[in-house]
Image (tube, rainbow over all chains, first blue to last red; front, side, top):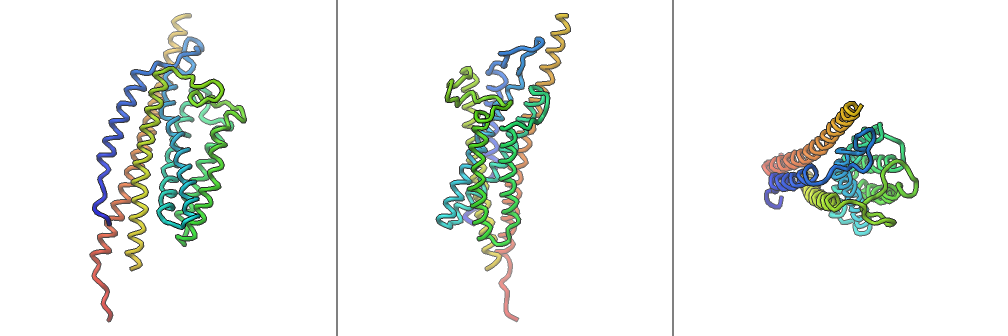
Length: 234
Length: 61
């Protein structure tokens, strides 16, 4: 081992402080969304605040699976295990954040749509994305030959990425019930009030930091596992 | 009539707050479980390395 691995405590503290600031912004600074009222109640109301967890999680899932694509292609080209570790680690973090995206979306959907789940394009393609990378991780666990396993996983990681643009553009290509983009909107530009936009961008930055930290920790775990395997065979 | 509408609005808002709370709690729980899972796997690997490094060298019989 290259020295004692760093403790998780400083990272957890940093993320907790960042989150605390985020929560203050989400609950105390950002106004309640009350553009449309139904029977005297705001149509979205406080449940709109789920947006600040849901959207950054979705962004991280895009980012994570893009890193899987890059890592997989680089591994196929170079056969360097460094790239395989990065792709594997990023897939795991991506699955966690896609799961969070799905669950927070479902919880938002219940009071707004009246149902936790609708088989509409954005939800369905996101579920497919989640299942593709759960399959990728399952395959990695079950593969008996590490070299061959890494090669096939790299192909799955590359082909699986096709679903990422499908998820992103599904709301524009196949009009479903999912809200249209309000930040990166090619037609109308950003449509959010300043407080909402700043809070969202802050949360996206914070989630990106969380992703980077988790990725680094998970890559180190992959390297340590390889070292253990080397020691075991020595 | 107005009181009834206000009460309904308050109930709807309250239920949304509960859903919001559940959503945020799930996010924290998932993140914490994942962090602890990484820490546990790392500890297991460290223990294994220590075990392998302290293993006496095998001597031919």
